[in-house]
Amino acid sequence: MNNNLRNYLSIAFAFFLFVGIVAGFQCCSSDTGGFIKAKEFGGENEIVLTTSQPVQDNIAPESFTVFEENDPDILMHPSKIEKGVDQKNNPTLTLSFADPLNQSNTHVVKAPELVPGTGPINLEVARSYLAFLVSIFIANLLINNYVFTKYLGLCVFMGTSKRKKTATGMGIVFTIVMLVSAVMSWLVNTYILQPFHLDFLQVVVFIGLVSLTVQAVDTILRKVNPILFNSFGVFLVLVIANCIIIAVPLYMANNHYNLIETIMLALGAGGGFLLALYLMSNVRERLELAPIPESFRGLPIAFVMAGQFALAFLGFSGLQIL
Image (cartoon, rainbow, N blue to C red; front, side, top):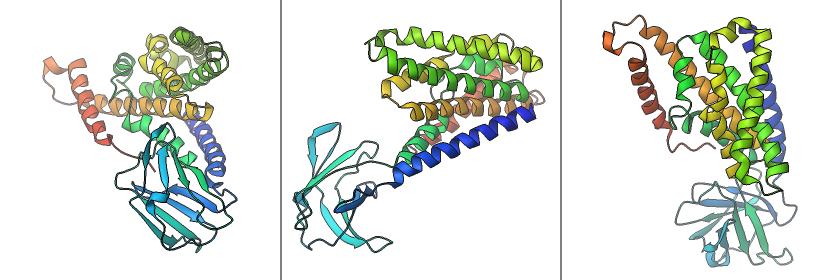
């Protein structure tokens, strides 16, 4: 099992390295090739524009119009504009707003010509794509952990968290099933359900894809590691109808994620379930040696500890990544 776990971690590391390189190229290529060389969010209420040449000193804040891409009817104007330079001594304009900006959404910035011959400004400002991918992963791993904050998958969670080895194996298998089924669901949803307007069949189709994935994992695990397969018992079959497995494709379809974003969503949700299982199995092994009243032994004390973990994970609420 240790060798298998080491192999899984190596594959995961290689995947994250690949995603980081691809996303890094996308997020770092911010040069627009014109007057505005780069644009990004600054503080919670700031947009920073890097220009190719200095602009005039007295710029009226009313000359800039900003709005969210998905809500163009609500127009905003910066309360003040500050000139400065970045680390490479390029001129910058910092647009400060009275209220915090919703940086999870893309913002459109428009302004008239600031320097003769450069043309008017019309650009989009969004978080770096790498930051967005990391936020999806961390949000589903910790902030919106499906077990401790959404209370999904409790049947498998309680049934396989008695021993650390079984919990780790189930967490890894669960993550693999979730990843494969989420990718298959994205392909079917993107190229079949959406083009032919068959959205009403999403639940049925996604359950079928999950069942196919679990059956494949069941067959492979039976041949590769019979001891681990027997330790799972009936809970491997219950993965088919597990709430988390179904929730991930539905969440993906509702938010219109692309393939990389879907993979990060599945890895975050699966990693969160693995983390929950590992933490709970450590505690339950210790509880077997603790002087617990007879009426609380078994599932009662396990549910009490699950509630304590849920309270602890609520501390991640409101956490913003990058």
